[in-house]
Length: 373
Image (cartoon, rainbow, N blue to C red):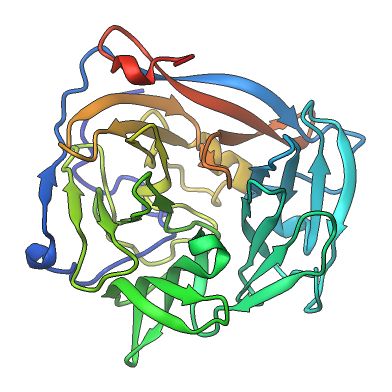
């Protein structure tokens, strides 16, 4: 793959998540930190854990699945192709059973999205169409739901022992279509807004605006249309506590061009966030520069994944220092437990999910985050 900077949009159809509007002023931020561009000898390595989706399994992994690992070590897969049914696999990747069903009732889903596991064995499942978060207690307790109402949620994290959620997505606020992260109570009432950004238009698909929690219980969000991240105290007003902003030559947010199909990803979009031992891990999709656009129809969703690369960055949020940067061929996504990454591959005519554990490797890595520490 070429290392040439992307100074213009070379793939007019490789655009799906569109953000074109003003970006909030940084004047509210208490700390502004530029992200450095030199990572030294530390890199991100991916260890393959297992693969999900054998030929004899029911349902399908799908082209845009959501996956999480439960507290027991099992794996749950949701995909649009399976409608409201969730596929459960054991820790070795063997299929166990189908959970849920398609519908609006308790334990049913229209388009299940992000799945967040609890340490007590519970699950919380975001439904993109029903616009609610379903809480499945451990030991097969009765499901409970949080209606997020006017917000089209794409990702979420749970706060304060389940009494609040930070939900990122988009919706109509003050008569304007906006990207936003909202603090929502267990009753669905909006309690606060973190960085609402009016946008001119959206091409909506199954890509999320990632959100994460750090060890200080701060909520981290992405910057719309930028390679940047913000830390918020969900209990306080007054803007972000920290802004991290970089200007890597490979980041290309658009703008959109006419005729972009809804199945195509943006040239560059931050797709995953997580925290591990005090460091921010970010995954960003970028167009594969080795591929040349043709004049034919847009590729299938699985082929789209192969036409993307994933930049994996590890950043010190206290200084903005880039700890590690690695480029991975293919599209990688985050899982609901924030500890793993996965990609979708076609094998023998079926879609399979390949699960990876990301670790730091190299002499330049901080000793406190070396593998096995």
